[in-house]
Length: 215
Ligand code: GRF
Image (cartoon, rainbow, N blue to C red; front, side, top):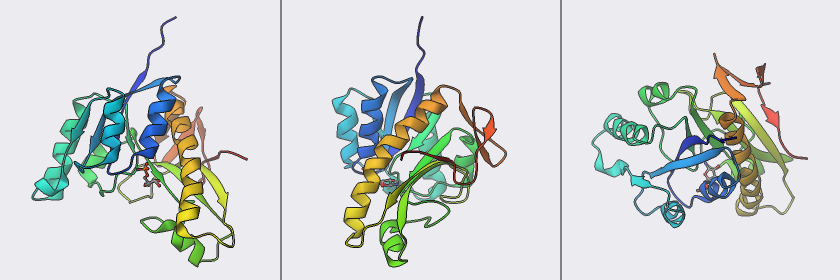
């Protein structure tokens, strides 16, 4: 029996630890990382990809006069790899409506909060400041609304009384590395899709908080 591997493109801006988790998982999974693209030439994640002979590209946002031009160059760079899925993994640029609509239904993001709580940045400190008992990670389809698309999966992390943003972020990141390859493999298996403004797994519409992964 031949196994077909779903080609994905991963977009990064920095360290790329989620990229690394995807690289490691892809060895025994149903997806293949066709290419990695960074908007920053110095992203450490580029080295992670190169170590595994994964093709890399840089589309440096600072070299474009407008967001529209950057988005278009990025779109073209992605399409050269003909991916079935585009995976944002610590990609720190807001993408415009034309870009998002072009990749509609095949664009996912990982966000370090229990969405719809805390879209945007600084999520760990915001959860601590609010006195929350728990925090976590969400994977969601990307729509025009930043961090606002349908949630696919979440995992929760208890907040400790002595947590700083850094200690909490480290525990959330551990969960990110488990949940993201899992969601990508669901997509690669044809089990996950977006219809209307809903995420569906095995043809079941998921609840607003998505699948709850983990203990
Ligand atoms: C992760 O916390 C991710 O959820 C957020 O940015 C961080 C990226 O980390 N969007 P890394 O580059 O994957 O190590």
